[in-house]
Amino acid sequence: MNMRPYKSSFNFGQNLKVLRKKRGLTQLELAEKVGLTLRAISYYETENKYPPTALLSAISRTLEVSMEELLGVKKLPDLPKNGRVWRKFKTIEIMTPRKQRQVFDFIRLVKNQK
Image (cartoon, rainbow, N blue to C red; front, side, top):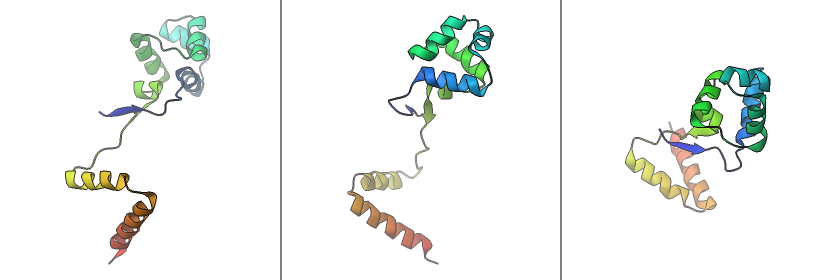
């Protein structure tokens, strides 16, 4: 499965806090459910530090989210099965914005033909 970070400014601590609150848990409740102290959860939320992998797994299970969601990673879109189409797409991607609009307009025209 191809994965990539959502963006470089991803903040694990903020994400953990948002997901915890979505589940309606206090820091203490989350800490008790995963076997940590309140101070540890507070540290991970405010210092933007990642807990050990085993704890990440326990936290994701407790918050009922995937590890990918907890870590701010998303699945890449599926690549086209037709390699020729993919190569053409990559060619369009490096064109100037004006040329891209022309290609998209042409595709729209062909698509809408009866």
